[in-house]
Image (cartoon, rainbow, N blue to C red; front, side, top):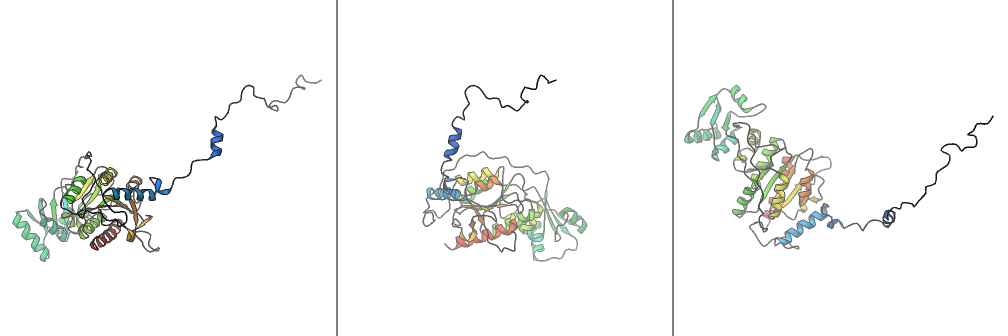
Amino acid sequence: MKSSGANKPRAGAVRKARKGPQVGSGGQGRQALEGRKPTPKAEDRPYHPAGKRKAAQERFVAAGGDRQSGRTPSSSGAPQRPAQQTQRPSRAKQTDDFEIVTGRNSVLEALRAKIPVTALYIATRIEYDDRVKEVMQIATKRGLPILEVMRPELDRLAGFDSVHQGLALKVPPYEYAHPTDLLERVVSRGQVPLLVALDGVTDPRNLGAIIRSVAAFGGQGVIVPQRRSVGLTAAAWKTSAGAAARTPVAMAGNLTQTLKAFKERGVFVLGLDGAGDTPLPELSWAKEPLVVVVGSEGKGLSRLVTETCDAIVSIPISAATESLNAGIAASVTLYEIAKQRAAR
């Protein structure tokens, strides 16, 4: 006996035809076949290195420079663009009540610079040399409290792994300058601005070495971000060998916005990176107002800071060497800029 469903087609074997009007693609398929528009040139793309160089060159020419010679008629280095009002971030408050400056050179330079001092600590049975004698003379003349302590107590004050050389100063927390005030101060003295900004540098010894290099090669100051960066600690004071007493350090609430404000005032921003497209010996803006941005040794420059820079500069090194740390890279760059400026 045959089943009642023997003559019925197997379920799913017949494709059902759609009825009614077919829905079209609205022309999308035709547009896809036509292709995209021609790819813009590299110099017309704002985030391409060639586009950044073109924009920087246009700003340079607009500021009164010569496209061929690369020189400006102004020899003072004063920015040519009108200054725009920017909201200044509040200064960061120090959580510690004081800082300890250690080392004979650092203590002597701090006293010579007449920074506020709470007390001078000197180790018992210290070996006197010319620096210690001058420290004692200045402290006595200023009427500073001089405390003679045992070396274990001085080790505790200086902190772990700190070489105090028998001298230490107790000073209030460092008062950072504002980046705009720092730039205006340099311009008011008729100098060509040469500043160094740090992006993500967390080692205080790198900060101290950079401060020392800035002072040695004619720079006027250092800028550190308010967050994710090292401040001027006792270790930075020690590494700077006293240069921190003569070189101002400014704190920026937002480093990217600070660099953009500097660019509006006619300052060129150079970033240091091993993969940069501009070799340091071929740098043509050394005699212009400059801010050199140094990134961390591991991560380098951040994305926003990289996009803000007018050019990314690389230092030619041997292929056997992977990279340079932040302090050495800044020192080499500042030397090259100082050498080109001296060759006027």
